[in-house]
Length: 636
Image 1 (spheres, rainbow, N blue to C red):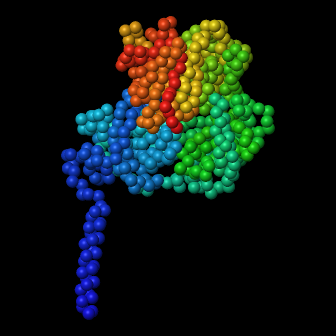
Image 2 (image 1 turned 90 degrees about the horizontal axis):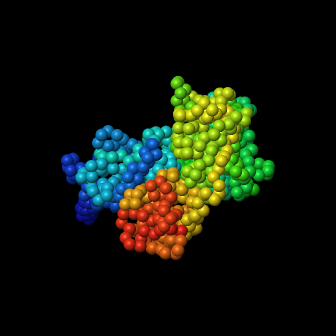
Image 3 (image 1 turned 90 degrees about the vertical axis):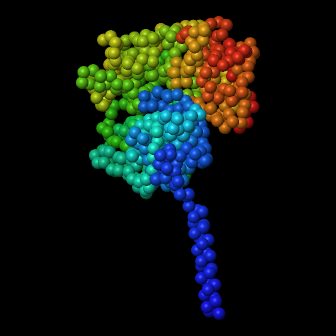
C-alpha cells in the first residue's frame, strides 16, 4: 500500500508540474518573433512592428502643439497606442525615456503617462502614434511619433506647465512641442528613479534649505478654508487647504523683520510679497473684485494639500493660499501655484501703476506687474550697449483698461478702438508726460514698459518703470512712470455697436470690441481667400466651444464627447434667416470662418457685421449679417 501511494503521489506531482508549466507559459508574453529589420519600435527590449501596434487598443484624436516661441504647428489626425498600454506596470518613482532615431530623447513622468482626471481634461492621453492623417509609418516619414491628445485638440505651453512633473529632471520639457518626439526608435522604462523624498522646495535667505514634500508634511501645519476671486469676478472655493505658515518658513532662513518674499513657480513665474502679505494682511475683495474696507484676517500658508488631496496627486501644489473661515475673499492673483523656490529679499519699496480711460481706473500693483514680467509669454527685453532692460510691452498694459475684455477671460487688446485712434499718455511721477499714438503702440512688442535693468530693479533715477525701445523720440523715453491714460478717445458714436450672441448650455454676448480683440490676438484667427478678397475671423467651431458644455474658462475647448453624441449649430442672421449645420461638419473645421474683416477692413454693408465664409459652403450656407449662433440638441 505504501508503494502504491508513493506511485500515485509521483503521478500527481507530474500532472501538477505539467499544468503549472502550461499555465506559466500561457501567462507570459509571447516570444518576440519580430525581426529587427521589421521592427518599427523597441519597448523595454521587445520589438514591435506596425501589425503588433495595430492589434493593441487604439487611441485616436486631432491635435497640434505650441513650440517655445508660442507658434502653433498644423493640426493633424493621429492614431496610435497609449503609452500607458505599453508600460502598464509603471510606478510613480519610474521615468519613461523615449529616444528618437537621431539621438534626441525625452523623459516622461508617471503623472503624464497615467494622468489624473484633472490632468486628463487639460493634457489628455499621450500616445505612440503610428499613423497621421491616414498615412502609417514607415510611409509616414515622421513616425512613429509621440503625440499629446488634449480634449480641445490644442496642447499649449500653458497646458504643459499645468501638467508636467515638479521634479527638476523634467526641466527639459521646455515647451509643449518638446514632448512630440519624432521617429521614435526605442522606449525604456527606468525604474525607481525619483520620489517625493527628493527636493521639492528650496528656501533661500541668510541660509539655504531644501525640503522634500515629505519633510513639509512633517512640519507644524494649519488647516482651513480659502476662497479667491479673479479679476473677471469669477470665484473659486471655498476649498480646504493644509500647509505651513509662510512666517514659519521665513523664520527658518531669515532672522530679520523687514523683508520682501519672492516666490518662484516651476515655470519661472515669480511673484513678490511684502512682509504684511506674508503675515496675512492682504486686501479683502468684494464679489465684483473691488477692494473693501474690511479688516483683513487671513492666514498666509504654503499649502501642500487641497480638499484632502496631497502632492503629488494634487498637481497645482504647493501653492500660496490665504485662509479665512468666515468666507472672506482674497485676490486670486496672490495665490501663486506650483511653488519651487522661496527667497527672502531686502525690503523693496512698493508702488502702483495707475491706468485710466475716461472715468474708469485700473491699478496695476507692483506684484502683478512683476509677475507678468517674469512670464516668458509677456516678457520682452531691449539691449542698449552692454545693458539689458526687461519688462512688458506697453500695448499689453494698455489692454488692462481699453475695454475689450470678455467677462470670462483675460485682458485683451481693443483692436477696434486702436484702429479708430487715440493717444496713450505716459506720465512720470513729477508730472512730465509723453504721447504715443495708438497705431504706434498696437501689438508693438518693441515699445517696452521696463521694470528691470540687467536682472535687477531699475535704479532710483528710472524706477519704478520706464519706456525703452527702438524708434522712440527722446521725450518718449519716459522715466519714473506713475500713470498711463488713454486720451483723445474717439467719440462713442464712432464705435460699432453690434454684438454677437452665442447660445448653448449658457449664453454669452460679445460686443464688436470684444470680437475684434479675439480676431486681433490671432490665437484663433483664420483667413479665407475669395474672389472678393481675404476674409479674417474666427472658426465657427471655436465659438461653439465657448458655449457647448458650460465650461467658463477663457481657453475655449470643443467637447469631443458631445460632438460624438451629435447636435446642431444654427447660424442666424439679423433678419432671422438661418442655416443649420451638423456639428460633425463644424467640429475642427478651420475653413468654416465667422469673418468680421475683408482685406483688413470691416465687411461691406450687405454682409456687415459678420459673415460665414469658407471653401466648401454651398448655396444658402454662407450666412450674412450674423447676429446669433445657437446650439440645438445638447444633453449634458
